[in-house]
Length: 226
Image 1 (tube, rainbow, N blue to C red):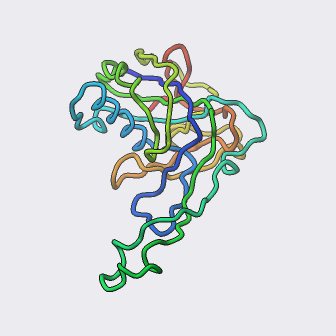
Image 2: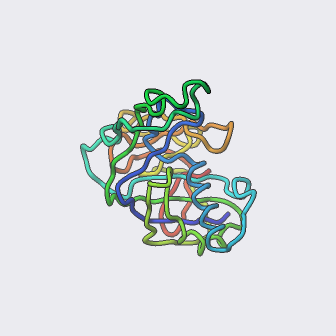
């Protein structure tokens, strides 16, 4: 198995909502695997000037974590809901579309504000190392305004290690690891791809969390074995 490790930072933060939400757009606290895979697929298309289908089948797992250690700062405290002015006329009844009071609506829109915060993205799969160059083209995570700058890309093989403990800021699949301090994690249900969700553990604070799990070594760092 191969891995791509991408380190980068947000400009202001990101806005990602649950699929099918419209009137109320609650924020997702972390970019789900599906968003990470989509960001890499878009980068491949941009760098190689071609559509890259089936990337979700090549990537076995994708994970996100903050590369910042700020003890006491909770992840949920970074999420807010802004009131945005959205055009709603196309979704109104035909006889109402020309009326001023039906043209716009106030829509609560969730965002996570993390200006200049550094993060790490992990991609695991077979035969994906050749996509490492394209990973430099990742320019956003989430909405088109969720700008992202890549600072470093590493490509390496995955080396298995024996069972043990490890610390990581990445979210991990719930069925692959056990937190040693349960109060330091929260359980989330994130989208991997359309129609498929996965339950994960994620740090409550912007810091690494210790887990008991099978381990693998990726680019001289320890991660949960997937």
